[in-house]
Length: 377
Image (cartoon, rainbow, N blue to C red):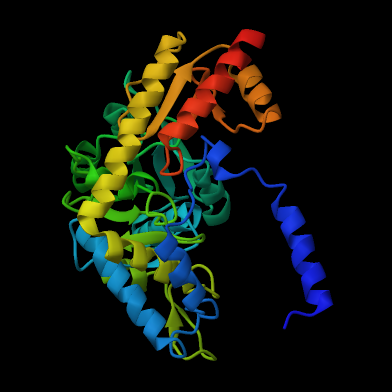
């Protein structure tokens, strides 16, 4: 029976939680309400810690099954990797492995080449790993300019980066061309598909962004985004085991002799919840989710165009931004009314992510409020 003290603590927690904005009013996040089966799986694995895999043997075995699932989805069933905290950690580990493998070939400070549209996690990577960040420009479709990437490569380049689902526009870089360039230049190619990794494979005409390109060495993919797993559940996959081996350190007091992960303690909840969703829904179920999100994205575009707002680009996936010089004013006023969107700087625009929680009812309610905001500003 719950004690009075426990009840008071729970009521306090509920009061703080009530201050959070519910997902039903959030059109900016790349995370979403977890799938019900993800929540059930999470609860079963609450006390698991993959940092000590000899104790949690079943959880470690389940992680192996999930990595094989994701590898098959990314066109390499024997890919290796692990489930991590999210896209930032995965990107760090992708570049860290590339740097470690190429270290013997680099005479001076290592550098990596990223698109100007890359996620801000690469700023952290430059700081943490001590690699120079070189930014390549983009073309008129907001995809990385291959010519600029090629021009920036030198003898100290350890990796180039392509994005499969840019944060601001959901655009996909020309990964096939980057793969050819990586092979030609003998550098690693890391693909940040934190968002797109669980969208693109389920689209009607999926772009070949993954390991089917021989130059792709590592891929970031986050089940806690479109995979509807509980947070945290990111993922990093590599083409072969040598990448993991380049990250290994000795762990003499644990049940494993070595560890290749960035963090020590790792909850098994992300593994269990991500596996449960993919296993329960399967390819066809995930395809239905993506199809519905794309349909609702088109619905949002139609509504916004009727109000005079033009997309920066036609949506490639369920991310879309609309040009406006009043982007910050609109965002602030919407937030005051408890609606959350985001903005981008180049060009000035308001940005939306149409996740599974952004239903047609949510869009209808949002547009009604948005009309009032536009009229008032």
